[in-house]
Image (cartoon, rainbow, N blue to C red; front, side, top):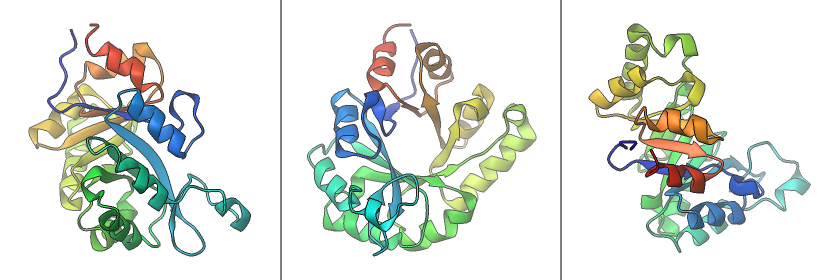
Length: 222
């Protein structure tokens, strides 16, 4: 059996299970598959309103993008679920927090995508929204105590709940070091069973995956 961390979560990557990315359908599919969290990418349209998109859009493309306000209306139907807002820019972040209060979903959201350059804007504009610091540790350093300690200090100084990092940059040693400091580790993106088993055994706090139903089944398989 795989021993999981207490409060371990599974996040459905946007576009999970062959849905279109950054859509209500993708969020619903992830939730209905049993994921605890759904991920969406966030940018701002030309009027400053947050929309679901990974890339910058033209004015015409903006018209068909899902507005974050629509996504918030939808996730209110799943009060026990959360949404990971993977932010791609910071130009009007305060609008996200005001919308979250307006739609009564402030307790259901948190940020990822927070690069070191984004930290000041996030803390100033959205003080009530928790976030993971994006951690870019080259694989050869993820086993090095000196480098891990560097990121522990960065994460604590940023006021983040933990780090979000790609699977290739993660190690069991890193995860244990963060847990000793009572900080969380979220790993992305898992696409197959063999890789899922490898990282589940490392005991991160969250795994982001394309097929959440498959990872959920694994929890009781090994």
